[in-house]
Each structure stands twice: as structure tokens, then as C-alpha cells.
Length: 357
Image (cartoon, rainbow, N blue to C red):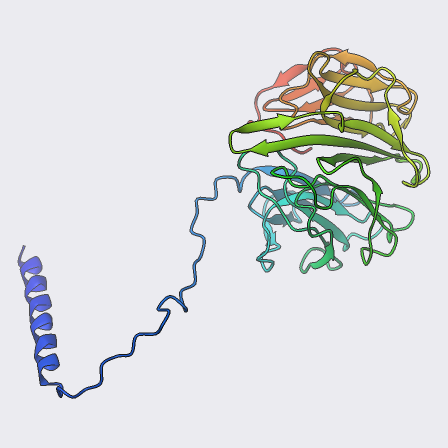
């Protein structure tokens, strides 16, 4: 109480002293000039909330050294670990234009060359967008903008293992409106120029892109028609489909045999490393949504099960590189199959929401 009284007394004396000094100033002192716009020098900074920084959108692991991998997040930027996740280095921090990451790809022949697609590949009302493709040649320490600035959301990047100057990008486009750079793009000069090699329409983008691990000319792509508004989400339509190219993207064939008829939604795909004739897909459909398998390199498909949890938000399927009997389906929970996708068990010990594997 005594200390508080002294504090009050000190403040009072200072206030009176200030008035005394003010009273002794000459009456002719010039008044301070108020600028025409008093807020010219005011600079705003974001203090939060940043509720989606923890949502991981993609992982890129250096196969020659799995202790090194990159993690891309919804609004938390890009991170790198060199010791299996014990410690992390934040990357992309000097790029103020975007902190939303959609996909990360490492050049399979050069660990220092890393490609990043900005804009998360999700369809929530909280979805954040990016401004194109970036490239690093020093292991992620610095990045250079490489174009596709109006793509908004990058779903997948594939680097040609034979010619690293050739890179493919699946651009999803804005979820909030039509147009922009969307579809599958290809560069043959390391990102200096891009050509669109697969396009459906202004409402449809590419949400998946997979290369045959034994033949760099064979590509699989999935296109996705969707639109989000403030009052809801409209996912699916005639633009959604699976595609295959056998000539490095020059021509594409729509894959329809065994695929549900009518409008499709979001689709995820994966190719088995040991036998590229085996391809899995998660297909969203009003009545026949589920996990599908092809044993003839996508020419025909058969439904394995109805498992396809919340496809508009996840739609990722992964084949174990050691055996095609083990299939992973990502969702709120992780779904695991050991019989090729006929039955699945929930792996509930992990945190909810699995967007990358």
C-alpha cells in the first residue's frame, strides 16, 4: 500500500511538473503541423490467429538419406529437418508473398534442387492460396520464383528423373472462382518457360499427377471441378476425371472403363513401384465412391471397397513400395489395408487429419 501511494505521488508530481514546464513555454511557439494523412507511416502486421499453421499438406523425403525431409504447411510455411525430425529449420521465411504450401518435390538426382508449389491443395473455407512455383538450388536456403503466379493452388510437382530440366506441375486453380492458370503444366528448361499440356475448362484444375516409376514418358493425372463460396461448397462435375499420357504429356486419354458414370469428385492416384501396371485410385462419386484398382496400367478399373473418407478434403492413397497388398488411405483417421484394399482397419493412435504420407 505504501509503495502504491508513492507511485501515485510520483505520477502526480510528474504530471504537475509537466504542466509547469508547459506553462513556461513562450506563447508564440508555432503549433505542430498536422500532416494531410496522419496514417501515412502506419504499417500493419499480422498478429494472428494463425490457426491452420499446423496442417501439413505435403512431405518430401530425400530417398538417399531419409533423415532429410521437407514439410509444407497450410499457412505455416516450409520446414526442413536433417535429423529425422529432431530439430527443424524454417524456410521460405524471407518470402513475404506466401506461407501456404501445396507440394514439395526434390530432384531425384540432385538433393540441393527443391521445387515448391504454393497454395494448399485443400477445399476448406479456411483454405489459403499461393502465387506460383518456386525453386531452390541450395537445399532450400534460398528460393526463386519460377512462374505460374495465378495458379493459386499447386497440387503436385513431378521432376523427370532422366532429365531434371523437365518438370510437371498439377495446378488446381482458385477454389473461390474460375479462371487462372489451372491444369497440368510442363517446363523443359528448368522453369524458365511453361506450357499447359492438359486443360479441361475454367472451373476445373488438376489435383493429382503421378509418373510411372519405370517410364518417364507415362503420366497419370486427375482433374477436379469444384467451387467454394461463403455459404457452401460445390464439389464435383463433368470436369473431374482420370487421364493418362504415354508420350510425356503431348496427348492424353481419359480413363473410363470401370470408372463410375456421371459426375465425379476429387480423385487421388498412386502407381506401384515394383509393377507399374498396378495403379490405385480414390474416386469420389455420389453412389460408387471408394478405393479402386487397375492391373493393366489404368485401362480398366475395379472397385475394391467403399473406403473413401471425406474425399473433398483428403483423397490421398498410397501403395506400400514393398508390397501391393498394403494400401494406405488418408482421412481424419489413417486407414490401412493388408489385402489390397478389400478391407481396412483404422489406425487411431495418430493425430487426426492425414493430408500427406
